[in-house]
Amino acid sequence: MLRLLSFTVFLATWWIAALLIGAEKLPPPPAVLTAIITEAHSGALFFNLGVTLARVALAFTLAMTLGASIGYLMGRVRLANRIGDPWLILLLNLPALVVIVLAYIWAGLTEVAAIAAIAINKLPTAVVTVREGTRALDAALDEMATVFAIPRWRALRHVILPQLAPYIAAAARSGLSLVWKIVLVAELLGRSNGVGFEIGVAFQLFDIPLLLAYSLSFVAVVLAIEIVLVQPFEIRLSRWRPRAA
Amino acid sequence: MQLEVDIARKAFTNAAGERLDVLSDFSFTLGAGEVGVFVGPSGCGKSTMLKILAGLDHDYQGRVTRPAGARIGMVFQEPRLLPWRSVEANVRLAAPLADEAKLSALFAVLELNAHRSHFPGELSLGLARRVALARAFAVDPDFLILDEPLASLDDALAARLRDQIAILVDSRPVMTLLVTHKWTMRFVSATACSSCHRDRHGFSPT
Image (cartoon, rainbow over all chains, first blue to last red; front, side, top):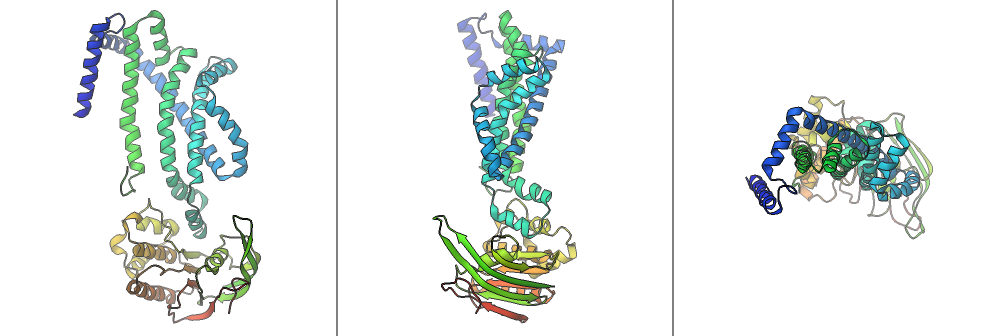
């Protein structure tokens, strides 16, 4: 109910602002809705959203898997941390645009380059978060697993991973929002489809209804994924806590 | 099945860089069915010794021969349960081969039947200690290590738990090592006894 109210307030503000500013700069909601329907009708909207989503899924999975593995290693092994730390600081502070442009120059305007560039942008934050989690692992539980001769993979699955879960969830949460932002830039600069590409086209043609149509559809998808996938996952992870914050 | 322990020296280096001898010239043997009890004031190295015997600490001078392939069941000073697994799942993680009948009997002896599906965060410390005991016994240990299993419990509960431990130890041919700071344990089968005192050489049998 509260959410519906806040959505209505948003629509009303938009509409009033559109009337004040003028439709050529800020089209009112019906104009944007028409653009969304047109794009949906031709199938272009779903195609571009799908392409973008696929890139997000691939880059996110790649970055999380690699990042969690590297972070765990750096948290456990001193030498790995000393070797990896300068790289980590470099990657953490490298602007996303530099990574994307360099990836396109070195690997061509390809799908691989786009996904790799997005993944590299997300990787260091995942590494840092999971490394912190690994450093906070309870040595007492490790000893327990050793004494009871719990096999290595079972211990990893049932003793280590649950301790890392809040950190992995935090890395996933911040990482996903980062990926949403970067994927459009990568598409704008070097792909010929996807939401980012369409927004670039709309920008060049000054087609503001089209621009808003894609932006809002994209935001809607992000929100849906957040509510349907991310939040239930976080609740499931923390269900053993007596009082989850 | 025999445990042979001959520790020449065990020292810690503290944060200030000073070496501190904890154990020196300490040896004993323990056979199957025997219970070794270590009594001593807190801080005299009892837990350090248990860590070495459990194979958790390899940084010492001397020799410890454990029977090959011996299953260890250990009760730590703290319960050390996994908070995200229920009581039963905690026990089953350590003892995946334990059958239902055996677990039921164990939970019955330790009066844990009502708490099988509870999470450790919902248990009192006394209950959590009993779960740790259940876990140690569920693995069918050849070598049972109990590090102050009754610490910080009130007398009545400690007495009940003591009896329960005695029943379980008597029913199995295990080597048992027990550490306590109070000489209040009464084990029918206790055959090997040691106590320690704090002196300039640290931990030594008397």
